[in-house]
Amino acid sequence: IYREDGAEPKLFSMEKSDLRELPEKEAEGNKGTFGKVLVVAGIPGMCGAAFLSASGAFATGAGMVKIITPEENRIPLQTMLPEAMISCTGDWENDFNWSDVLVIGPGIGMTVKAADKVRFFLKKAKQEGKPVVLDADGLNLLARKKELLPQEAKEIILTPHMKEMAGMIGCTVSELAERRFEKLQKFVGDYGVVCALKDARTLVAAQGRQMFLNTAGNSAMAKAGSGDVLAGVIAGLLAQHMSAYDAAVLGVYLHACGGDEARKRCGAYSVLAQDLTEGIKICIKETKRGEN
Image 1 (tube, rainbow, N blue to C red):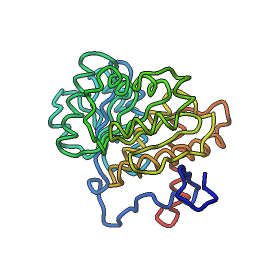
Image 2: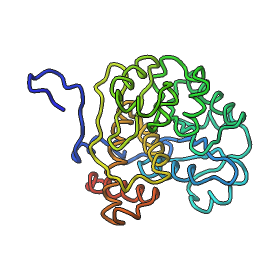
Image 3: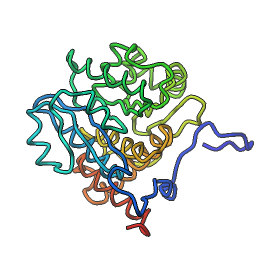
Image 4: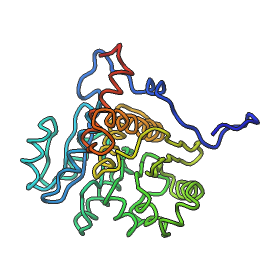
C-alpha cells in the first residue's frame, strides 16, 4: 500500500489502534448533543433493514433515531427496538426538520412512492446541507434516475455493493471488478460524492482524497442485512459531527472489526447481521475503555 519512494500512497488502510479516532463522548452531553438520525426505510412487512440500520446508528453513539416506515411496521419495530421513534404520518417535512443526518434506502422498495421519498429527502438535504447515507434500494432508484443525485454532493455517502455500483455506472459486475479502482475514482470525481464500494475488501473514495482499502472483516459477514448495519454505523458517526469522508472510512473499518468480533463469538457460519452490532459495541468498549 505504501510506496517505497516516499511519495504519497495511492491507498491506505487502518489498524485497530485507529479506532481511537472515534468521536469523544462529552461528559456534559445529552441525547441531542450526540445527534439525531432519520432512517427512511422499509416497505410493509419488511422492517428488518430499518431495525438493523437504526441499531447500527445507536451502536456508534447516535443520541436519537427516528424511522420513517409504513404503519404495518410500527409494532414490530417498537418491539424490536423500543429506543427508536417511529413515524408513519407522512409528514416528511417535519421529520426532515427534526433530523441531523439521514439514512435513505434500506428496504424502501422500488415503487413510485419510494422514488418520491428519495427525491424529496435528497433535495432537502442538499438545500440544508445535511449529510445523507444512501443505501440499498435508494441506490437502485438512483441507477434509474441519476438526476436525483445533486451535483457536488459532498455530504452524501453512497454505500453500494458491486452489483449496485455496476447498475449506477452502467457496466457489468465483471467489468467493474476488472477496473474497480479506476471506475470508482471516476465516479466520485464526476458526482462529488463519497462512495464506499462494498466487496470482500471494501474501498472508500472521495474526490481529492486518498482511497481507503479495508483489510479487516471476514466472509462470515456475508449475510443479508450486513450492509444495513453499515449504513447506520456511518450515520451514527456523522451525527457526532464527523466529516462524510472520515465517517465512511472509520465506519467501514469499525463495521469490519465488529464482524471479526462476531466471528469469534458465533463462528464462521452462524454470524447474523444483528451480531455485528454486538461486535461493534465490544470494539468500541475496548478502544474507549477509559470512558466506559
